[in-house]
Amino acid sequence: MFVGSMNDGMLGLGFSGIDAGEELTVLDNMVSQGLLPAPVFSFYFNRYNSRDRDSVLTLGGTNPDYYTGDFTFANLSMPDHWQFEIDRIQLANDLGTASFYTCQAEINTGSSLIVGPSYQVGVLNKRLGAKPMKGDLKMVSSYNF
Image 1 (cartoon, helix red, strand yellow):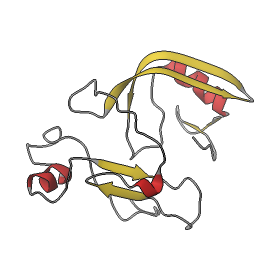
Image 2: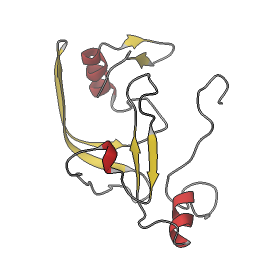
Image 3: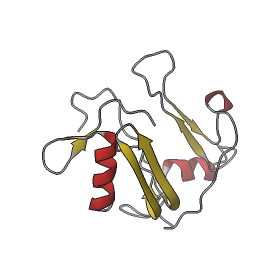
Image 4: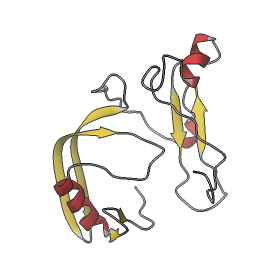
């Protein structure tokens, strides 16, 4: 799975009990032992291909060195997934505009895929300038969000 990749492994941050068994997740285990001040984790992803600033995972809170302003919180729409409702998605660039209203989204930091209903994802792919790959996949090169 990791042949040729630049990572050292994988850390699941899903919910306890959704995989094989009722074992605690790493995060839940750390919270139960009092090792973290809060049951929170946050990510900073370096969007550039440089070592000026590495990507960071912070367990137990957030790191203000990597953001400004306030957070917007969303309630989960499924109790065992990082899924929530989005009121609106709007994309505007030189390829046109695409808007969608009220849909479900799931955050998965282990994937670079945009998954959803065929029509809406097709419009997003077109507006992002995605190029066909093998199978039903399309690729967007160097697009920053």
